[in-house]
Length: 74
Image 1 (cartoon, rainbow, N blue to C red):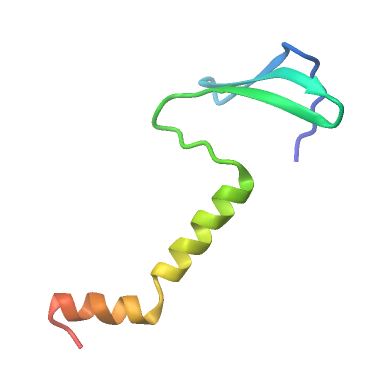
Image 2: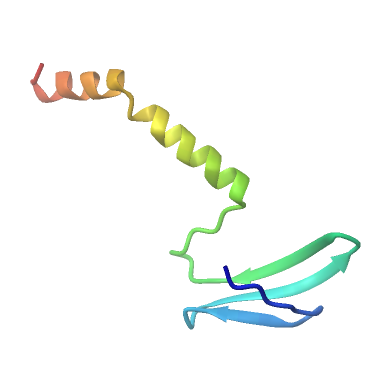
């Protein structure tokens, strides 16, 4: 992991097309602004974890059996 120090209104650039700017600092909370192309998904980590879990549940054995049934397999 790369650890960087930034002050309010300072930014960093990722991959030439994503800019993350420190907008505000209040106590232990930091507000970030992210500028990225529309095709780049951006999620909070806890939301991303929920999406991953939902995807895993969707691909359970019952789901595979149903898919096989739709495709004419057993």
